[in-house]
Length: 409
Image (cartoon, rainbow, N blue to C red; front, side):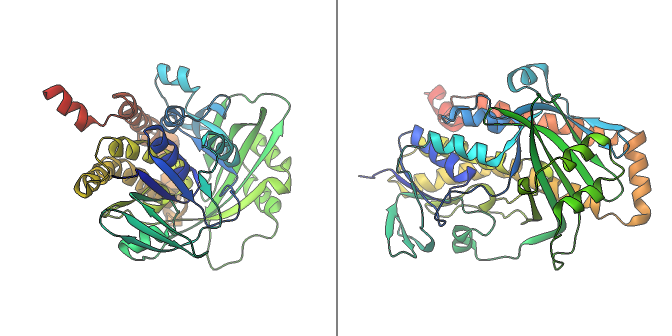
């Protein structure tokens, strides 16, 4: 008899979400993390309503998790170019477009929801072998583990992905981002602004963390990956923000240096297949996404929910049934994740890699036509609502194909 054992490789949001979702439907789950401690990969974060909904369904306490806000696109002079307009019902439930928070705040909530002993630290995966009825894992510390299903949640440089499909070059977007956060005594106004000039994005949204209000902000522009990172992050950010509205310049000036971080933006093009046998991928292991979408962590959380639904509906000892469940999971997720990741890539290129002679034309169109409103302000909400509908249309752990069979019977 199958032990219904699932091994998750990686303890980021995707791995923890997959584990929590699987535990709620009766699986015995172990997360293997190569690091010696759990650390958030980055400092600032935004979450759209669908991953917020999933977090609630998989047992994460989302009360007061982040600061809700409405999202606007502006030019550097403060002129509004677009508003992300969700329905009144969604805004009432989720407080606006998305919430701003710190990554560590999300990690804390997810860690608190996991049963003690779920995560094993210092487990660096060295080999993975699908034996048919089970999967054998070998780790650098000499330990081994046999699982019925293995979920690769080990990020953009996923060892699980490499074992399934080989290695491929990372797509360097020739962009980098400096982000920071600060806390304030008063609650923010609930407005998030993503603003651009000809070459640079300077943006901010409210945050909520451990009962404290504040703001997160980020500065994003083109870079040469071969160049050394800026030595003075605050000076770099203040220089790029010159000419943008006073509010964001004040936020940058008031930010403690220890609350700032810089990272290069990279991703990978979508791959045609995620799963093989009893092994599959979630999150950045499957679809690493530029932060231009503000949806990378969110999609990884959603992945775990849909994966658990499919696995819950099959006999885990049946190789063909497991393989079919994994295929249904990825077939459902790939249109959504591919669209978001590719649009994020194209948006980054449109704002930061357009030839200089075309930038005035682009900005004139954005400032004087409804183009950006239609492209982002109207289309993004449609996509968000379609994802919410997928989560809400059925019991969270009864896949649609199983409901169809039950109805026919």
